[in-house]
Length: 261
Image 1 (tube, one colour):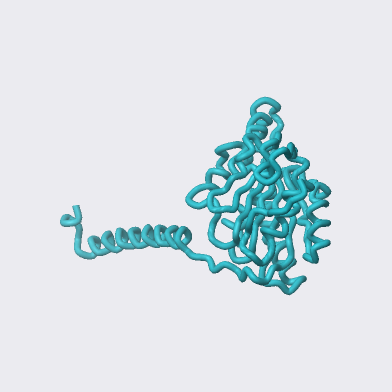
Image 2: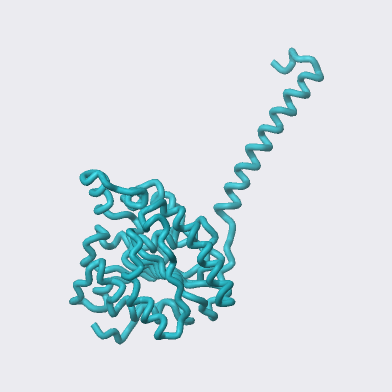
């Protein structure tokens, strides 16, 4: 077909095709860069403030045992204000977390933050690390009873009760958000991840939805075999409180020992 065109028209067509190919290559290159870009982890020997991210529904009082334990241990603590009552878009909550992290780093003159995410707050924290600037700001991320792969309770709420706000739908197993979050690498480059949960959790179903490839994973029962800690009881559980020292200190994260079960 090109052979039938006048030379000037043929050059225009070839240039248009070439421009299209270059544009497509640029898009592919941008995607490859995003997928392969490395992140320089922040210094592990200088812990900054600890951000506490509440769970679904946004109740910050549930985090009081964690806040009090960290404060007694001399850590600066910031309780992240809930966004949308804790039931709104998890992506929006993650973007808001980035702003809180910036403010805390400036306020305490710190080079990084640690994050404790309870329940859905652990999903928010991981979303922030992967997509919203947290990879170069978070030193440690502790996920406490978090439905990192969804919970059947959210699925039931959506299918039977018919009342399931945005975050609830995002916490259904195999939701678009969780499918993207768990693709390629469940613990992306940047912070060190720790995940703890209870085998008796009645909200995160199954409880081991909290397990993260690449994290230090443990159950309350692996330390205290007779424990029957509920989902609501996790922030005050002795294993979780002991984990604040062993996972958010200077040494590499580790399963706590000498816990008063």
